[in-house]
Amino acid sequence: MGIFAKIKAGLQKTQQKLVHEIKRIITLSPKLSSTSLGDIEAALMGADLGTAMSQQIVAEVKRSYETQGRGGEDVLTIARREVVRVFEGNQPELHKESSGVTVLSIVGVNGTGKTTTTAKLAHFLKERGQTSVIAACDTFRAAAIEQLKLWGQRLDVPVIAAAYGADAASVGHDAVSAARSRSVDYLIVDTAGRLHTKHNLMQELQKLHRVLGKQAPGAPHEVLLVLDGSTGMNALNQAREFHKAVPLTGLVITKLDGTSKGGMVVAIRKELGLPVKFIGVGEQADDLQPFDAEQFASALFEDS
Image (tube, rainbow, N blue to C red; front, side, top):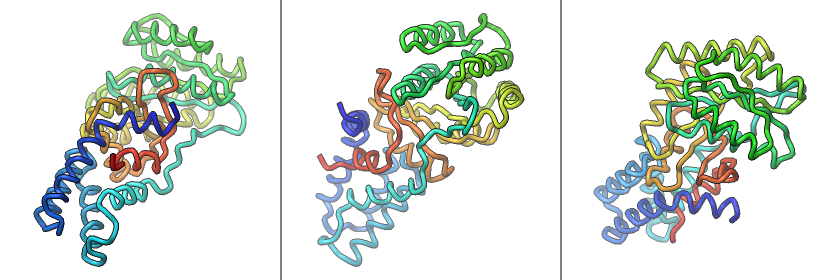
């Protein structure tokens, strides 16, 4: 299955609900009254595109219909274009240091798919001919360490780990040394899941990042927040709080398959301006795809 087909399939639930509702509104009110425009805005917000983005799309729809009438662009075409506009300047490419190891820190709340994303990133890099080492810095969860070790065996990627309950910063310190000694391109650090409201846990994450920075200048070079696409607008609150505690360089949106809330990707970009690096549309190792705004917007508003 091609990349666009994977994204389209993953967003199918969001797309079906959204497109069906918009077409229903237009059919009932072909002249697009203020009531029907309000209904379109509600449909967009129902897919978690957020208030600001939904209002932007509706304003453009209204302007188009006032100037061109029914012969102009349809609502779905306008919506696609406005979503693409929001992602102008989005840089999905991972940073790469000119020399030495590039450190990626994978952060987020519990249950978003951080550990799986860490492994999928290692697979993605391997497919591109780049090497990596994984640091199992989620020492709060024994299952996370075992899970990464299994992924490491499967992908033939070294995993640096310590015992359950070990100091995460110590593991990170050792992992940088191991990555350097192996001369790999990337060190991918799987951090423990933590609620964005828990100040002490955020301080532990900051400590880990300080240790990484002492070992490798500028590290972590990327801080990627993993968000569960099915949580909708709650993900925006997570992004806000993590960004305050540890400045984020990008987002990875997982579990977009099977949710009708895929618009949250757009809402977060609209408010915080953070790059969306990858989206996850399945369970397989290659189901983590670099984000492409054109493909995403097309999959979201495709008239099927």
